[in-house]
Image (cartoon, rainbow, N blue to C red; front, side, top):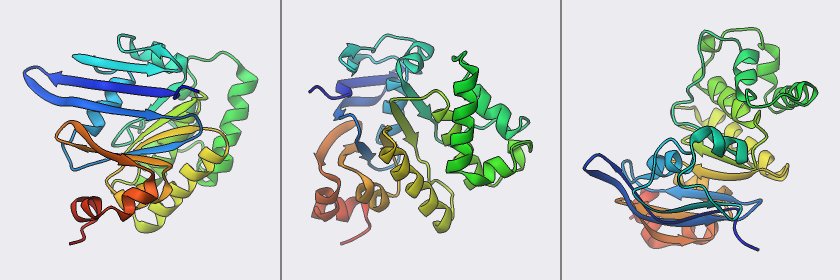
Length: 238
């Protein structure tokens, strides 16, 4: 069986600056796959290219066997890829429920939309309790819950999460990672970019190390956790 997502020899540039030069990885259906690496390694650029926000200079992005490298972002969303961006990007002047409805803007099945809103509230009870409050009043962790819930409203086959634990307390970080595991158990495939390499690899079926815009190492998450090169470079161990 072919992977759900295949990225091959990806190259992406911002003008004359090459941000990604040789990234290759794959994600099988039902997996959690992590991309780890230092700041500026090209991880966020890679996700933005997969979701159609950037165009690759070279290489391919295939989803469910189809080349999606040149498709616009809304078409990629309709195929089943949702992108939860770095920094959460919730709409602060809108309520929780209005933010969630925006996540379903490509859908017209009202009963299904309402069912999925209830599912988000089951995952994150605080959102249901405060569904009529403005998102801008929420803490960083609560906004991250809302960003994940909004992404789930498109019913994605692949959910891409960019730095979901950034700026969060240890307690909130644990809650977010528990939710990621729960989403996988419910059938969602997840591609995770995360500075907390220890937590990400412990959760992941497979991981890839990206360094200076290229894939340099990969393996099962627990094997990468035990790799001395990874522990020294990304886990702060000598």
